[in-house]
Length: 335
Image (cartoon, rainbow, N blue to C red; front, top):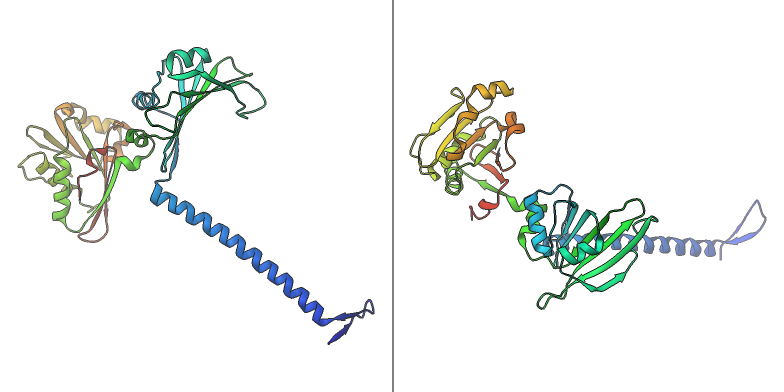
């Protein structure tokens, strides 16, 4: 056995014992590092698997339109009067998608439960939501079970000391209406395809054009040479128009008349509202036609929320990535 004399202490220390201790410490650290890396790896794999196979995704929306509130109210089987407000809603996907809704400014919590919901008042149960220390009242109600539904809707109704209004926190644990998801995720109103030639681009645009209706506005995004005019040729064909479509760069607008007319605008040189008005943009009959607008970025602030945006990205001379967003009409346009 090899011995080492410690000059400071005068003790004899076994070199073999030191090496054994050092080896044990290194082994412990290796096991600890491997364990941590394994846990992180499994965590990542779990969430990736959940996302791709179970549709796991979460979104919160704070500003909902009357239309969206109506869809949510129908799903929850409740009435939402004008004197209350839906402050936010949250959606989580998965095997049993979950919808959570917060309704504020409720004058009387019990009256809301009895008059505007189908929650069973006999299922009343006092609970603590742990919102904060100022919580004074909280109760939970369950909805009547749907046929064979093991995931009931729950409603938590609570009031804080700082306000005389009530808030309802409603959870549905198995959302089946696909319209609910569309409120939260633009992906359901978006599609992206790759075309490998101008002919494929025109063919896709023709299919899309056949689904257009009076009042639609197509807003193009894409740089010079992206193929916006080529795409418009397909739109015109889809609308049944026989005219030869050309770029409106110099004329600012080209008109193609038909049962549903097409007005093709180029806003490249438009930089102010006065210039836009000078083009006669507001005078064209949108209610009887379809607008296709190149360089729509220049007038984006005046386009309505229902505008259909088409982004054309040039990959090479023939290949284009085309993204359509703002309307789910076109989800099955290209197979």
